[in-house]
Amino acid sequence: MANQAMQDLPAVHESRRRWRTAIITMMTGRTLEACVESGRDNILQLRLMAALMVVLGHSNIGGPGSIRYDPVNYFLPHTWVHPIGLMIFFTISGFLISLSFVRRPQLLRFLRARALRLWPALIVCLVLCAFVLGPWLTSVPLHEYFSTSRPDNPYLYVAYRASMLKGVNELPGLFRTTTSVAPGAVNTPLWSLVVEATMYLWVAGAGVLRLFRFPWLTSIGIATLFSVTLLWPMIQGIAPPYVLMIEGFFGAGAIACLLRRHIPVSTGLMLLLAAACFAARNSVHATPFTWLAVAYFVFWFSYVPRLPPMPYQADLSYGAYIWAWPVQQTVVLLTHLNEPLYIFAITLIFLLPISAASWFFIEKPALRLKDRRRFRTARRDLAESVAI
Image 1: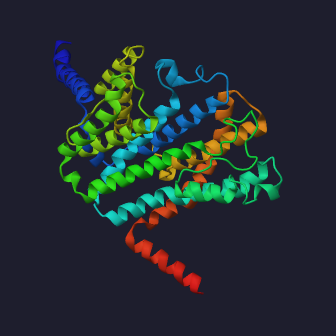
Image 2: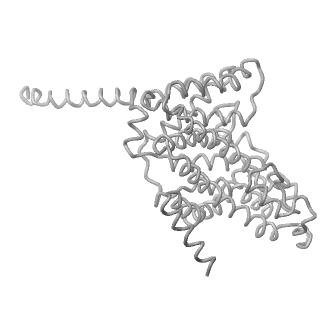
Image 3: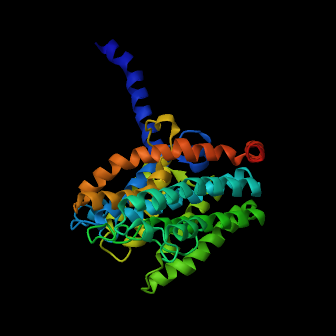
């Protein structure tokens, strides 16, 4: 038996060594750059989760149990699930959009790719809402619905919303009942797309000025800008504008891109930030700790857990985001429900197939045109078809 015990000692030592290595790896993790270069991520899953968080938060608007049914507000009394979803979206966007320009600093390709990502699916959504959903559900006669004398006519709605100019968020007689999620509002979340497009232009401008060649200096500049405009007013007790807050998360994602060689991504650090955030939830430090934890969670979730890949690499998040509100409004209008979880569940039944259709038939084909060769071929084919 003594001989057997002696033979087992190396295996025991090896097992302990592996445990120590696993614990150290969990605490120290890898750099963000190493995570990116590994080629494996959960970004599609995270984007979809963020979109569904926004859907859940907006479902609460129509029901009496919004706080009771809000999982984020239960643990963090000073915030709610849909702002957290939006923070996640903009952090991912700031990181990936900046990384896109850093890797391929071609201005025209960058702008073309960004336009193809936003507008094709958006225009289809606007047209279907204005000329299919609206005429079906409107409470006014169709001749009045299509009357150009009305300031909320469907033609102006599509034109203003597609151009991302400040315009109407209403259509004649649509969602006017008091049981709606928000009476009269056709697609409120589209306001954030204007902010997103503005951030794209800022990244393009920084790329043209070659600021990405100076990662530390540019990061300090971004951090200083948002510290002065966002954090300093908070210290003075002034609530910052909501738009400025989500722009700050885009900036945080951009900084993470620039300093990715120096940012560790580890479960240990994530746990420490989560614990600090929870401990400070009822203090004056709740908001800064929440913001820091959310921004870091984006990179931890993207690269640490090993999740099953999305089927067919489908990115359902954008379609879910732009379609969720009108689908929710329709569900509430037709069912007269006011319980948030019921609204959320029924919305998902219709929203996920719509999002899949948007990705496979609109978004994915459009993104294939971002490369110059395919774009020129598509443009030539279109010109030839028009000539014929």
